Image (cartoon, rainbow, N blue to C red; front, top):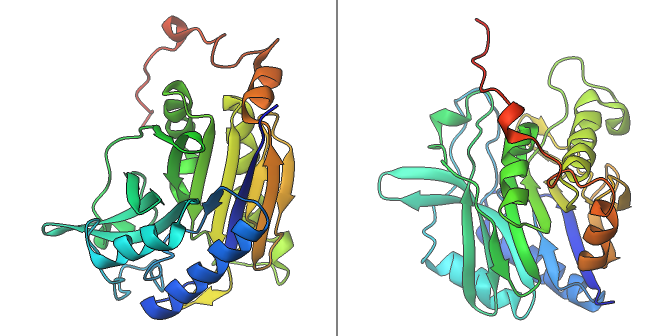
Length: 278
């Protein structure tokens, strides 16, 4: 049995890039000390998320994939595969993106496809979901609201992703919020999506999230590692921290899919393409 230790982070990240990189350096060291070869940081870890979702927030700094900040992240990663969110500049467009780096190289970039509320006033939308090979296996990346759409995670699973990482800046409810984050309905939804997406696709799921407060938003934290049966192996709860679990990727997938293979047993011809009722 070959095992892999993975880590998911719940932590606050704002606009100050030097502060962000000091925090990332500390988190990489902590993950490495615990044997983790995969570290998943939150959405917008480099430069922070939007301070509100009303469309009036000042945008985060826009960074190029080949610019000094992502180069710095790749250098900090060393031999650890590190995934982090940032605001990507591509010509005149900005994207809410996630990057995977290891050993000084960029492995993959995912641009957030699904945009909640007024996020489209700041970012252009991505257009695809693609798995990629990495030193720790075949991975897929989603960003926050992407995980609310079953088709997104299913596309990655069908593309061979063994581990899906979801990087989030998922806030608590803005209307009638619960005083206790653990009781907030948006915390429950965050956790439910993580477990459902892992179970329905029978993949390992590594979920990172922002914590604390930024502008008008209060984030639910709840970083976690979920197995292909939908069971939570490690979680930070609604506090800042690092969820770490050691998994047997090949064995876990084989065990979960042995009798009831959700990908194998699909009947695509029966899934009629529907247009939503207006």
